[in-house]
Image (cartoon, rainbow, N blue to C red; front, top):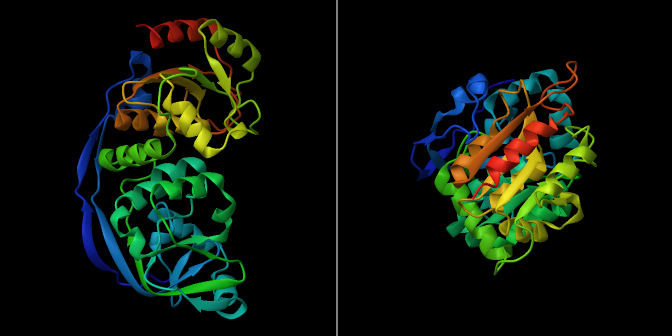
Length: 349
């Protein structure tokens, strides 16, 4: 693939470089140091606002100019290299010859990448980029792939930012942007600029959060209906959690606005690794979260780092699984004796 020849202009520095420091979990065991030691401190690069000229946006969320795919289409630059395995000829034939091209109505804004369609990545990666340009949104048209139009969490969260104009790129078309503004990521995915992620939380809570106390302050987010990362002994796990007064929530039963309200009342949140745990974003500072995680997974620390960025107390419990499964997708078995001990620590006054 030829390198991008877009040569964007830097319009503004949005956030300075910072250093994220994360305390060890409250129930840290020395034998688990390898899970966390590489995440205790991380340099978060600066965020900038870039302006591209004469760029095209495709329905599958890819920005391109000429015969170049822009790196800004991807969560990580390395993801762009995967396109070498795809038929670039087919991509350009479809987008230049088979799809109609129309011009963006005015100066456009782009905040998504190839991972943004997921709940976690929309809230923590895309919305943080929107947050840093929030004062400009009334002057711009936000471009989104058409698939985002039916996502409740996208529609409900955009309202909180005062976005008034969204232009969806349909499957039959390509949008040509004479001027396209792209805020760079506020942090690598799974890491956070504290100002940006807390700003997103404040806007969402102001929009959908509970106005007063009440409801359950102890919530267990179950993945019992999910195709992967389930708790194999979920019934027994639920019974232990009920002993400690936890209410079980299936996130898919609630609208986005309802989830924000429910979790804004939560003081304690328990779940295994998965999208539902992203709802810790709506818990108030000083709350606590317990993540049930694969005993070998030292890579997926996005909730450990999110808790630190949000000022939440992080607890964890390592769990066994089938040795043949990928740790990121494996179903887990929760040790109930250990769970009771961790819940006692979690809820201790």
